[in-house]
Length: 323
Ligand code: FES
Ligand SMILES: [Fe+2]
Image 1 (tube, rainbow, N blue to C red):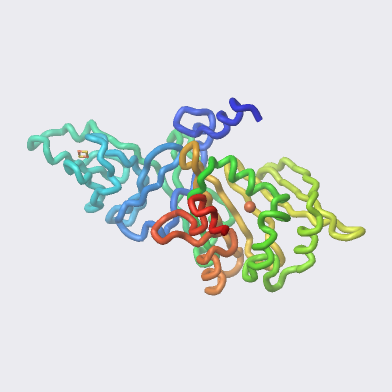
Image 2: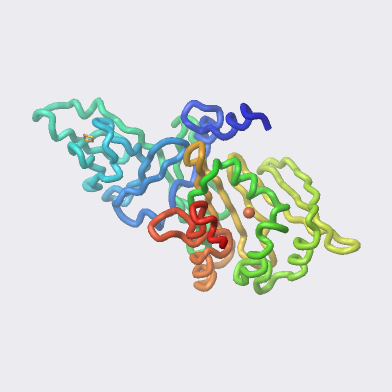
């Protein structure tokens, strides 16, 4: 790929070609669990500094982080009475971005009516607050991924920061061949969610470990791109792993046996980092307490988090805990 092509695909600030494309989709912004109350949460997306809040009626909103007055961060603002108040001079905004009050103005002033901040529409689905950052007249139907239509008991969903652009990590998510190498160890040891888990076909382990030259085939469908990785199973059979890609940044990974279905999304945070979303789910039953516990500890598609952060315990700064 040429540098110009790479830049075209990975730059997502407002006004860039890919930035415009991403802004035509509902994107996962944060989990419901991250916004239990009125305390603002930072959700930088597509190069824009944003915060999520809940107003006193429980409605979630995603707003620009910088106060338009002197650029103080509304992350430190106080949510009360239908909006958020800037900590610096007290300007107050509602969840639609309207300025409700400028305390320093003379009595009777209507200056606040001229002030607005960016406020993006949200929907809550599948344990996630989704945001639409595009033109209002182009807003699509709410996200309908199967996992996004399920009760929250059926799924476990997390987001983490990855220190690379979305395209780099998305490429890994769509690439079945590295399974034979990078994830060979975890496939063996992840007994709750891995291929070595209960109810799974242990031959798959051998096939993935043995045939390290998968042959790819792709198929364009109305619902996205199917990516098939074909490995030799035995003298007469193939083993196919089918991954679905759904534009602009979603996938569904083949489940193994009766284990959970798996989905991922890679949403640009800015041009150098992305939010890596991981979902493990059952369509027809809740996850067990043991499965949830294992995922909290980094099982399945998840990582164990440094408490209070979106950073995995094993991360770039500590060489992923390799000694
Ligand atoms: S900077 Fe927000 S009110 Fe002044
Ligand atoms: Fe991977």
